[in-house]
Image (cartoon, rainbow, N blue to C red; front, side, top):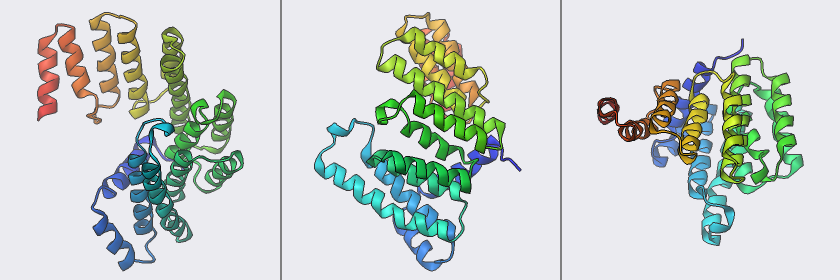
Length: 272
C-alpha cells in the first residue's frame, strides 16, 4: 500500500517534534530501552540535525576549522545510533535520510552516493525526505549536474509506488533548477519558467508552497506589481495553510499592495 503525502508528513513531523526534546531526555530513553529502534533513531536524528544546524547555510569556506570540527563531531556521533536503529528494524527511510543528509554536508563520493540510493530503493522507496536529500546531493553546487538529478528522478520513478510522492519529488527538481537560474545565473525569466513547470503537477503541500514562495521572490526582483506579488504570496500560504513560516511575508505583501484589511487579518491570525 503506497503511503500518502499526508501520512508521510505526519510521521516526519512527529519525529522532528520528538528530536526537539532536550538531549538529556533522549539518551536515557535509548539506554532504558536498548531494543527499541525508535529510541536509537531519534537519538541519531537529534545529532544529525544538531550537526546540520552547526553547519548552517554559509558556503564551506566560510566555516572555521573549529566550526567544521563541531559539525563533524555531531554528524559522526549520529552514525552508530542510526545504524543500530536500522539493525533493530526501524522504518528505514528516516534513518537513511539522516545518513544521507550527513553525507551531503560532509561530502560523498559517487560510489557512496550510488550506495545510498541503492539502500533507499531496497529498504524504503517511498520515503520522500531521503529522495529529497539525494536530489540535493545531485545538484551542481554539490558537485552534481542536471544529468545526475535526472538519474535520481528516473530511479525514483521506477522505485516509488506512490504517484503523489513522485510528483512532489519531480516538482522539487524544478525548484532546484529555478533556484540556480535565479540566484547563480541571474536569469529570472528562465527561473520563473522552471517554477511554472514544477507547479504544473505538484500536489498541495510544502513543496508547492516552496515553489510559490520562490516565484513571489522572483516577481519582486522582476519589478512586478505589489498586487501580483501579494497574490503569489497568498497562493503560497494557501498551498500549505498549516505552515506558519510565510504568514508574516504575506501580511507585509498585502501592506505593500495597499490592502490593509487583508494585511491586518493575516497578521492578527499570526499573532494569535
